Image 1 (cartoon, rainbow, N blue to C red):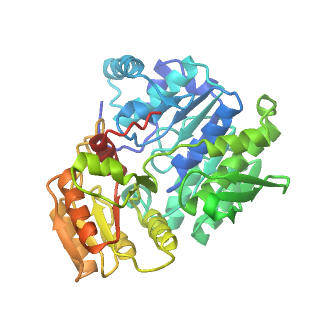
Image 2: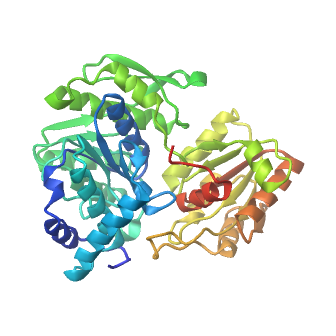
Image 3: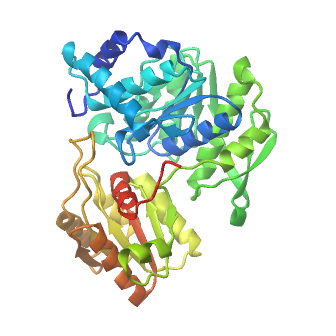
Amino acid sequence: MSTGIKLDLERIFSILELINNPQKRLSIIHIAGTNGKGSTSAYIDSILLKSGYKTGRFNSPHLLEPRDSIRINGLPISKENFLKTNEFITNINSINNLGSTSFEILTAISLYLFDKEQVDVSIIEVGMGGRLDATNVFDNVLSSIITSIGMDHTDFLGDNIISIAKEKAGIMKTNGNVIIAPQIEKAALDTLKKCAEEIGCAKIILVDGAKWEKEESRLVSTKLLDNMDIKINIPLSGDIQLENSATAIIAIDLLRKTEKKFANITNEHIIDGIKSTKWPGRLQSIDASKLSNILGMSISSNLLIDGAHNPQAVKALRTFIDKKHENKLIKTHWIFAATKGKNISEIFEILLKDDDSLTAVGFSKVEGMPWISCYDPKEIIKVAKNVKENINVSVAENLREALNHAYTKCNKEGGLVVLCGSLYFIADLFRFLQINVYD
């Protein structure tokens, strides 16, 4: 098994052929994009579960361990099931000398198990890009969904928004349905529409998004395909969820209007499904009392955590903080770690204010992804100082030290503590705080 990233479909098709092509028997909702894929898939999954359907969902990267990227009926597959299936497929890969990557193996495991479990619908999130991603193995799909597109993975997908959009559009199918979420970049939207028309998609649906009805209670209103309003309570934080929830709702509305199998989905199922959605690590607040108990120090303010790791996502994080504090320049104590290769200079241009402090730290090795490594905290500090010369900076040896340092400053100077930069870093926090994300 190869560990690195190789954008090529030959190996995944070879291994799927050897396990009897499970992808040909599955009903698929396929989701590509830069940001919002995970929460959009979680909304769709939750609605379908509330409607009484059996679901499979494949997200990447995993949060705590590889098995949690594969879910059946909303729950990660068991360790036993994962290890057994992983051994089976890894052996097939090895015996036939296919050289499949670990992501291709994981994709094959998910499709094999969804087929074996005879799920009603499989919700599949693209790993990277779309056109050459290991998940792009389906002849037909119920719908292709493209969430918000921004600059990320430029080494593989191209160094401009048009090239990236074309790669994402690679999951669209001739005579298939495509749902395009609101796009920040006009060039991305124009490219996606053009690709959909050239490919010959049957339906091309542009999502308008949603609007706040009562933001304090997180009540929003969005329109269904017949232009009727539906009001829902969004449990996930951030204005980006106006787009993600609306995209999920349109996907479900199209599904029930075009597929007899899903015709019994009601508006009540949609409302209940959205309200019940969980997607940890994104604009999530960690209770101060839990931190106090583990760190052994007095902490009065909650910890805000977010897996934002590209410019578009950190803009959403910065907007959330500013909006929550009514655009007052509240002092923010950042705890930051990042994957090598990310443009942390551009990230800091968005995040950092003059009065902020920054504690840099690394994150643990990522199981199943040995090619992933974190920035040296000293390099993070160097980049941050280049962006904001007067910012107070420090390096921590580990997560406990980073939290202690940030909260010591917060207790003394006031403000807000935010931990961000990578989902791999968020995973370290969950393990450190012993937070169960599998409920």
